[in-house]
Length: 510
Ligand SMILES: NC(=O)C1=CN([C@@H]2O[C@H](COP(=O)(O)OP(=O)(O)OC[C@H]3O[C@@H](n4cnc5c(N)ncnc54)[C@H](OP(=O)(O)O)[C@@H]3O)[C@@H](O)[C@H]2O)C=CC1
Ligand SMILES: O=C1O[C@H](COP(=O)(O)O)[C@@H](O)[C@H](O)[C@H]1O
Image (cartoon, rainbow, N blue to C red; front, side, top):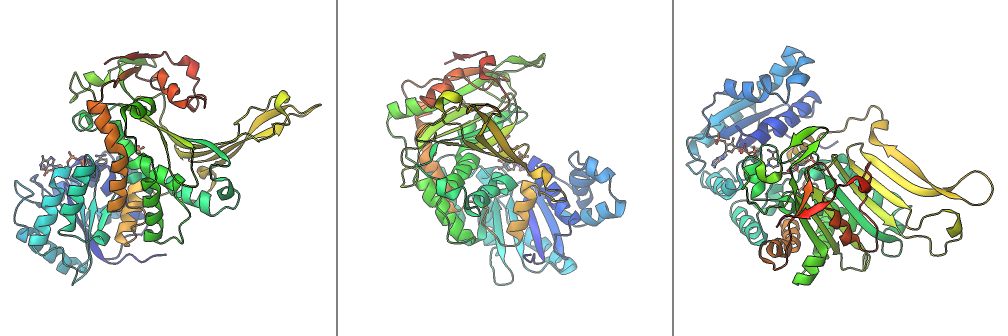
């Protein structure tokens, strides 16, 4: 087991949603699992006027996210954790002299023996990331001569290739690349990491993992919720920026990458960057028209309840052209994947919440049982990222009786069947990794830029292209019907648990 050294975590934007919803619950779990180092404190910093006690109330004692957990625990256990939390009001601005912050850090370090190791977590609006890094540097808080200093940076990492480059450049003025941990919470999901293990620790999959045996790859990320209370943020982002550029291209990179030499962070990240760089960039309007589809959910009823359309959501422009659905077909231009199409879609207000990777294998080259019911392209490897985390293999078996009638059967593995196994939440795992200095599951600067390089032309086309459509889909269905056109020749999207024929269809709304 790796060692977690004594340290302090300073969270900027500590009065915000992410801190209460993900960071503190993640740390609480680590505390309960005895994974925090003996000398550890959290210093929350934001502009809100809070005392240490008020901060503890907000993120622990009165937190809706910890309510159920706390009920089952001893008071002293909860107090043991809450007493590690402190708060500092930064004044009215994050762009200020950090000398008082430094003083507070020094005093906490002296009182709690946390050593000079400090993790800074940027959980503010992204416009403040560089400012905070600069102010830390000006206060001498980024120097590593008395302990390491690391910087965790939340998404979104840029709004485009240009802004991502600017941000990388800005942060690199004050922190070196090895000090920077760009978080992508999908990489903290056990099943996303399992993609590496499935591929590279079995001898049965990797020999087939190429253009000779794989027909196409399909990745679905569906959410049943709409934009919830984040309409203001989402309307400036959209599905492509919010999910595809980061989480889904991270999954793609793990599917596409070549075997790394070993399991060291740079060995794995080097291969992921190569994979992302191999994605064929769509340059002309026709290619972009043929291979990309965007759509918005429109008002509907789900289980008898009226559901708002995207343009009626709070914080969303009533004439918004921001997509809540994106489906993209693309190729990886390299030896392994030549000619194999990748179909990736992400959307809100789908019938269910599911994320899965489907590897569709080619049909056997000589179909001996073709008259007996064996469908071509029937072999599938389905990696269920969430929910029901696991792996499903679909294969043909003989129907008992005379002749050779073939039916499809399932070999199904569920993570939940591994009794006694504690599966960490994504943020919990990623926080622990960063605390231990392991950047394997964090995105490197060149990785993020390579992803933007692929996404930028699509965003540009959707904004400025001539024949761009924005389709509508009724909230609660599997997106616009014409998304199947992307699949030309490859059938339909796999809609887990649903029958496409129930889809009431689509309309062009602009
Ligand atoms: N919430 C989530 O589920 C997710 C969030 N993220 C990212 O994490 C970061 C934090 O998210 P979240 O906590 O939801 O954000 P919030 O909007 O809740 O903001 C976090 C804190 O930043 C400060 N802040 C907000 N607006 C401003 C402003 N204009 N100027 C200065 N300070 C401001 C506020 O603290 P105060 O006013 O006290 O200074 C606020 O508490 C963002 O970059 C977001 O994109 C990423 C994935 C998921
Ligand atoms: O980063 C984000 O992810 C969530 C979905 O995360 P999941 O772990 O629940 O799959 C998404 O709702 C949100 O819009 C996006 O910003």
